Length: 242
Image (tube, rainbow, N blue to C red; front, side, top):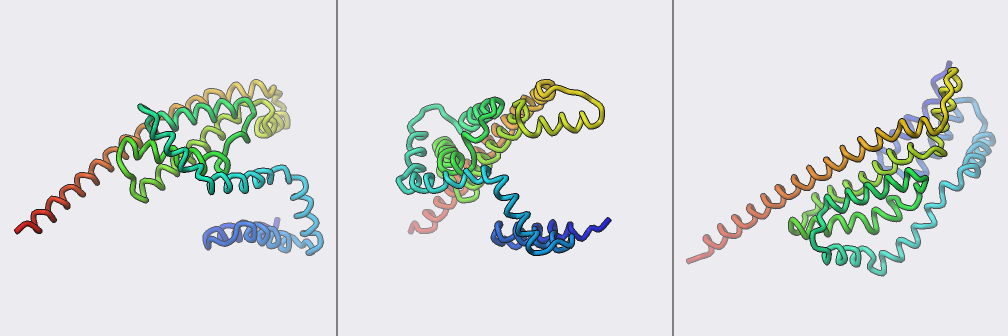
């Protein structure tokens, strides 16, 4: 067995480590693996074209990017932040836990593409989370804003990943069924989906606890920074006094 075709994996790792263009990295990795496997340039191009055509539906999300860009230019993020600031009693934890529940429930019904990083997290959920955190704990610095945005993105990922396995028609469920069938074990997709339900519930509870812990940590960090700033201002005022 030749391991040279795995050279493409090294190309992917190196390309992403160097922060190169992802499309260039993936295509280069495909050529590296193909040439290492003894394929001709024409055969590699044919394989890449066939793969693109068979998976072109996955590129539909690109159509949302121009629309999101126009909405952001029109002030979508600012409107979302002002709307969150106008809601009393809404905290970062309540917002993200509510979104997690909604995302997971929709994924369980097979509606996996109604939300996502490009169409929901960046233009709506991230600025709404920042506004909720700033309203409760004061203006966030750059590091904390990045942490809040990362938590919003992670919430979307977890809701989608652990919710979609409960949907019986998902490819992963059918893959599991095919694997067991190949080993002489017959399982219905509904059985596999039902066994995924406890995992989805556990993921919801665990991530909800993580969100609450993050909110408490953020509150302590903001309070400490505010105390440090106030102490520094008092010291400067005392030094400036005659």
